[in-house]
Image 1 (cartoon, rainbow, N blue to C red):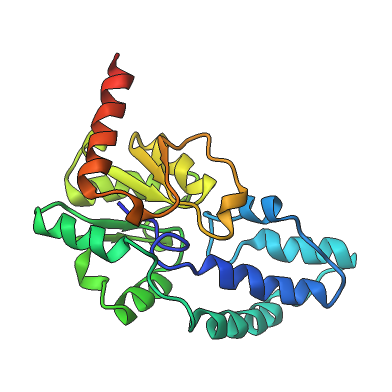
Image 2 (image 1 turned 180 degrees about the vertical axis):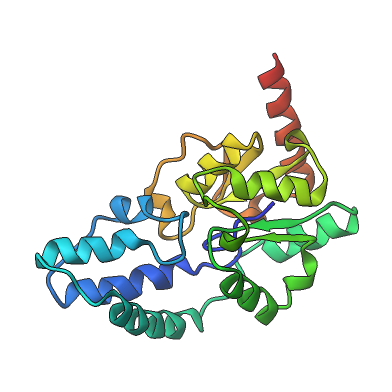
Length: 221
């Protein structure tokens, strides 16, 4: 099971850069660790607007800021590619007949649009997004829904995440959690991760499965 933003495609660096450009115009600087802590629960964190309003001391036209920022994010996204190892891991899992799902706190149109653009949409047996649940990450609903969609138990699945919120959601759903920090979330801590790797490409599917099985034996013991 894959998160999307920051795990399959690094949308989070363009997101951060687009906000930093807005913040810099008013003299606001947000520490990297603080910014990383906002990610995983929404494609465009409401807290980002709240930080700007707090700094300015008054409310802002959030929709106008959102439109302006989103235009810049899309410009920056044009330079991004699928992150290393993702496509290879998907293809290997498919060749073995394993079920694949995306569990994302983002809107379906956002996730589907990017997956379709990179030719990955048909690779997944299930796609669970913000519209499919009442609560997104760090609540476990997206992952429990993905488990139901694939017809598997939690101890038969591995979650790949990049954020602390996502890792918490997967852990609460009972999954083995692999965290792959990106350029933004590397500043966060991951107390709910079973395994942290620098890149999905760093290990083979067999190595991830072995790590998950070893983790289950350790938990059982």
